[in-house]
Length: 291
Image (cartoon, rainbow, N blue to C red; front, top):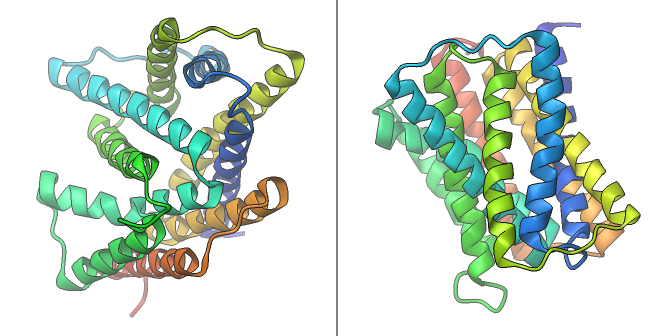
């Protein structure tokens, strides 16, 4: 089995984990308050990551002031992403939330062009524009289904984009487990502080089971996503992240009786096609894909 094939398998497993996590969080809507959900998920993921870091060794190098600012910005972005995604999951259809988040592969090169000055050719620029048009078909600005939670999904995309770009800036100064540990710590602290502004509900056994599911899914999603990136070529493995969209459609239909309308499906197809084209162009530019 080639490294690319292994990376593709890991990427599909990662996206499946994240899709299952989203479904379980949505199932908690109305059972536990939102901030309490974020806090409890944060502490459970924190414990799992802390165990991994402890077993692999705590090798935090001394960070300079710039790296500390970058790590802090990444932690804030992680907190924002958690807040916006959980809020959207509690108030929107699962498939629509996941589909809007699929514009991430389009947003990251655009962000890198604006902030980091990385080149962006006209073909990829057009593809990004088409992808964002597909996103507009999903959120339908001005339509009956458009609300503040659609904006929350877009805000989550911005937060996750900042999170991913800043992770690149940290390089090898921190391990993947350590970076994830600090992110989980920030989410837990922010969620716990926010719980003081809402009633704290008693957690039943069923709720603990529902909380355990997404915690384990997030943990394994982090691990296998890192394996996917390190095992295979990014331009090849990244296109398999769209498996998460298919899993979300199936899970949403089976467990929540949700199915996107025709325009949303057309928009989803547009995002997937343009996203795969972006990966294809990046692969050709780097010489990964043969001409």
